[in-house]
Length: 267
Length: 256
Image (cartoon, rainbow over all chains, first blue to last red; front, side):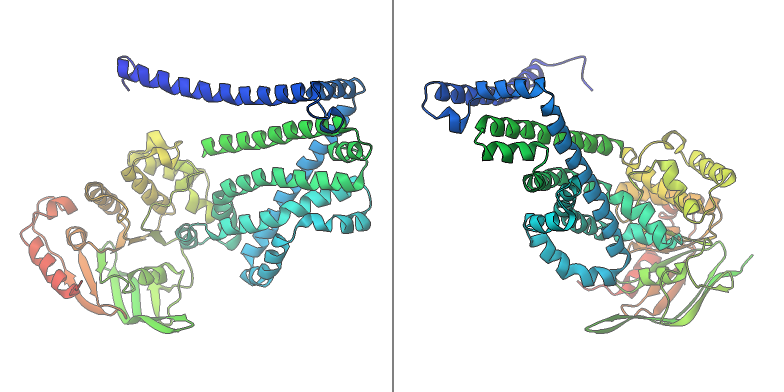
């Protein structure tokens, strides 16, 4: 390239680009700070009722208290691990079922209307049924998370399998490949990006399942803290839990996105 | 040594859809000799690719029979290599891993066969790119890698289904010359399906002209070009070139 002779024009261009990028980040941070500052001030001057709306300083106090007795880590850890188990099992089970559908077009055609209906059905409606069938345990929560993500996974991964380049499949057939070889050598590897992107969707879906499950089971986890805080009118606890939940959700999503980027770079 | 490596005997092929039945190929008979470079030209959609698919064993003819090396075709065999329109190199495999795909599938990947593939890659200018991924290669290099993948299982007969149609014209001229030289050097029999009459005349020993659907043989031309170096590009300068080109063009009877 022309690295040794950087023209003034190019310098200006790079500078303008950096400036723009910097100003976006600064505005993003400023927006966050402004939000919390306004919240704090509004509560301080009693424009809003801090008992109902809570207040950043009270949230901070709650975080410190929860950290002292270590319960913040227990509850966050429980929710995060349930979510991880949920989205991993949802993605794996969904992919296995998608393979089954790909293997037998007959099964795929037969199950098609059922999948469409199950996909449209809000899975949270099944919560009470699962609670009765499985009981108020962690298993119920994980099943909830799994149910919510598995149907979307089946549909998306099956679609990816079906849209695998027919000529690539033909190439393998001319080489004498068996159906299993077609699956492992071309259909699965070419669908990896789709599976990872489903994994990304499933992080969010599985978290919904886990929180709904924790609402119902009410034993531990951030969902439990939220429902408990709501019932005893401890809005500080509710707000704190929601904030921690937002951070945990973002971190999980970002780590899958990072994994996806790594993987795409390799290909 | 003239021996028939492919014998197509009274082959017909029908396609069925709910709205009816289409005859793609009608009672076609053709022999291909060992070491020959035969081109098949015909109007679009006349069943050229169908014919190749049947020779490769992934499609069964409705009636008639096809013999390869004297044996009836019952399914894909390692005697026949198929090259498709695009290179179809797998983006998640390195060039070497792409080239050994056929060996892997036929469970013939061992030290010896791997060495043979590496030898082919070295021989045809891809040694530095063995461990690169296809997206790092130029169009021409990708096509060579695809040919090596086909050659890896050591087939006697190569089926080329418009393998250069995805390339731009200049690359296409250069790469078809290269591929032709490789095929001749490795002493393979080639059956080459193309739309490009000039490409067919320049490269072939024989050209089969097919009619429009259902495909029948309209004419067979033995090509004799007077040129010093018998390679496709130099042969384009032969005085007979234009004569063959015009004759085949008229036979194809293209109306737009």
